[in-house]
Length: 314
Ligand SMILES: C[S@@+](CC[C@H](N)C(=O)[O-])C[C@H]1O[C@@H](n2cnc3c(N)ncnc32)[C@H](O)[C@@H]1O
Image (cartoon, rainbow, N blue to C red; front, side):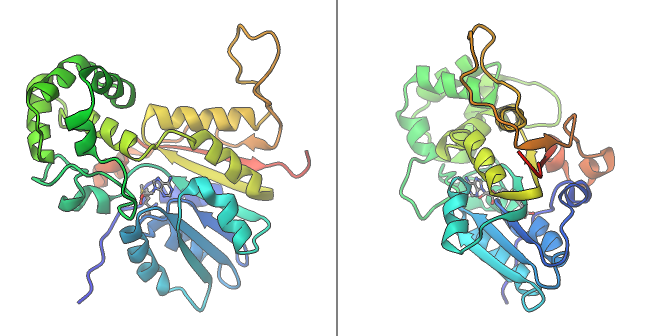
């Protein structure tokens, strides 16, 4: 029997309220994952709508396709193995000239975290891989941990993990090479960080940093969000769920720049960022999941939801 992995979609109610999918419309889920949000959106496009889902994780995409197959016939569904940074080309190649809405639910899925062999989680004695797109032979977390200099390790753990003990963690990693598995790395990091209390594992930040670097998660994120906004029809909406401050910063900068607010540093004499007014930001502050959702789905705890609407005329 075919088993289907599951991922509890985050802030579904808020996402749907903000996106307002309606029958006959064309929507993109730029991070379709296991299809949780996509199924909710697609069911609201019936009849006559079209849901296009992208993911760079082929395994996730297969699960999403199976989940969304229930709806086929009532609504058109297309899943594409692609990086969301290529969204304009994906749409162009399918003859789509504009979309009514787009969702980005950034970060990792439960499938990735819960699959021992993918190496994303400190819970498993698995090789340190962490590539979302395993079809590409690219950098793995093992390459970084075993080959990068202590200085570079410290920099990424501080910058992408926001780990206060980055220097101690980097030194401990270098002293304990070769590091063969996620579980071994978790032990090294936990020992270096020391007891911290709280609910999150002491290796969470270091694992986050490695995952972000392996998958180049921040590079081009602001541009990808801006490109998606340009694909929106007048009145179309974008919703972004982010899970850490670097993602949130990219979203805020994209929304600021395309709502016509300059993002140049204060000392620059004249605007060079090319701010233009294409959208109205709908969420004056990021929305967060309520306590009940966090209790039911602890992975939602760091979620921030932001939305904007494409202006009718520019
Ligand atoms: C939090 S999960 C999405 C879960 C989904 N909303 C659901 O309800 O099942 C994030 C997904 O984004 C994908 N992803 C991350 N970066 C991506 C990128 N640059 N392009 C396409 N997909 C990406 C990951 O592979 C992962 O499956």
